[in-house]
Length: 259
Image 1 (tube, rainbow, N blue to C red):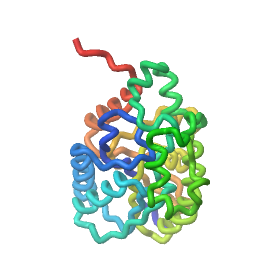
Image 2 (cartoon, rainbow, N blue to C red):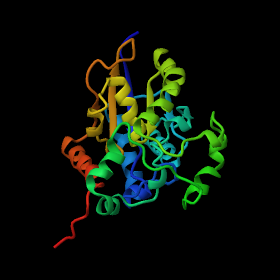
Image 3 (cartoon, one colour):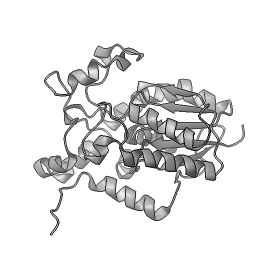
Image 4 (cartoon, rainbow, N blue to C red):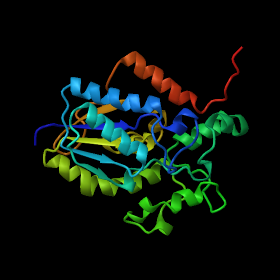
């Protein structure tokens, strides 16, 4: 098999990204900035000559909406889109809805970093007293999953995200790539980080320092064993990408009032 290209994408900015809240499995649409990010991403991919045969998304609106906007900007609206909960964002449990900067103030920046970035640490689980519990688990989209609702996660570390993502990668996505299909995966920060960890063999320690900004495509070139032939590359203006990475990393820090 000839070398194939895979593009991974964290969705454009969502409403709760803008508010610096743990969004997780609460369904949110893209912000105005997120719509533009997705459209700009599509324009960039078109300029670079990318074409797709198949797109995979989570079952969360911000992931799906991003894929639609990217394909629209590329004049490839006809490309099939397949959806699975296994590409969902990490389940942040009891942290869902909370502001990251306020959490850093109350619990310390280091603890928030551990909750956000460590590989094996799970936040406290969500329970029925949580204000967003019913909104998540009464949502009809979770009746479409290959697990019953009572078996779906109540919290996850990045390890659990990878564990539930890998069967979908190996059984559904990878076979399409082996057929020669050109694939875009429009997912989330943590599901994308988890897949990159698997593909590139990133260590449990090193994965905590991998930051993916919203709306920036990640290009991979894979060999016949679906292993990268070179490190992944974030596409776009390098200065803008670094600024976007810093904004993501600063989300878990205590806000310093402007003088």
